[in-house]
Each structure stands twice: as C-alpha cells, then as structure tokens.
Amino acid sequence: MAAHPSVHAAVVFLKMQEFARRPVTEQARLRAQLEAVVAVTTADLDAEDRIVLEASDGAAIVVLGDPQGALRLAESAMSAATAGLPLSVGINHGAVRLAAGSKSGEALVGDGIAVAASVAEFASPSRLLISRSFRDALAHRAPRLEASLIAAGTFTDAGLRTHELYRRNGRAARARASRYRALSAAAAFALLAAGVGVRIAGEGQERFVDDMVAKYRDTAEQSESYLRALVEKVKFQ
Image 1 (cartoon, rainbow, N blue to C red):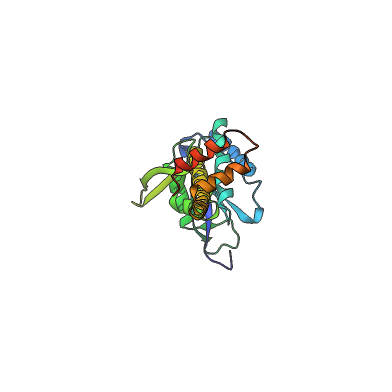
Image 2: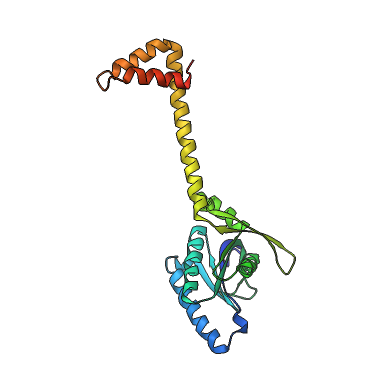
C-alpha cells in the first residue's frame, strides 16, 4: 500500500452497541471477547490480505481483493451475538490509505472505513447491513452471492449523506436460481421445438410422426398416439 497511496477494499466494521456507556470492567470484558471473535473470523483469510484496526467502540477489518471473504467474515462475527456480545455489523467497499506519517498498515484512513462505521451505526444489535458499493463489488466477483442481498432502505448519517443499504436474504438467491433453471429449461425446449419444427416443415407432419413412431414402436403401444398428441399440442406448422 505504500506504493499505492489509496486502494479500494472491503471493510467490515464490528460495532459494540452502547459501548461507551458501559462500566469500565464490562468494556474490558467485551473488548476481550471482540478480540477473540476477530481472531477466529479472520483465520481463513490470508494474513497479507487483511488488516485489523481497533476502533473506540469496536474493530474494522480491511479485506483486500476478497469481497466474498469479507461477507463470510461478517456473517461469522454475527454468530457472536448469540454468545452475549452486542454486535452490529456494517460492510462497505471503498478507498483506504495509510494515514500521514504512518509506515505500517496499523493506521489506515479513508472513506471506505468511515462509511463502514456509518453502516454499522445504522444496524440494530445482531444485524448486518451492507452498502451499495459493497453490493456492486460483490456482483462483480460473485454474482450468486449478490443475488441474496435485498434492499434494507435508505439511511442518512450525521453529515446528511444518504446510504442505500442492503441485507442478506438466502431465499432471494434460491428464488433467482429457480428462475434461472426455469428459463434455461424453457430455452432448451424452445431450441428443441425449433429443431423439430424444421424437420416437420421439411418432411411434413405425418411423415415426421410416422418416423418417430417407427423408432419407438418396440417401447410401448402408446407411442404413436403420444407423439401425435404432442405435435398437436405445441401446434408445429
């Protein structure tokens, strides 16, 4: 990153709700739990492709070149909420760069991080929200995952900047997959029908049916009636 002052990356912001209002001892306990969550959820990402930044009320994980990994990380972190860690999660994709005077990745700044923090702020406890820019990045790298993101609304931050946000819905991906299968089947049938139609146009309907019946005469006595009914049903001309 030193050679490239600004790069685009996925940013997962893990925010601990009402952290500043909690007693110091509870803050210490929650911080330790969060560190454990970060260690576990980032374990399957290459060390050179992720940077963990500490925030006053949570942590930001910058993930380079792997939006699928960022989404997987965020969803894994959400499971920590069931263990009593009051997390909300925001994901964004945007510009990050080294802070002035910094020689390591431990001091990153940029709009990518700021927007991720805002998105996490909009999310209620145990909820994951996703920015439009991250959705676009995911669509480029993993269209099937992008299909599972549905609109969650438009939010306005303290700086009067609006954010179009999304949430994960596994049923949406399955529904789109079903539509694709249906369209594929329809397309295949249309191609088959077109091929049969060409044969009928060249040979005539009666000859076509007779040839088909002859091929399948030994399979069943109903071959002729079935094939004739099929041709009549689709009205090949």
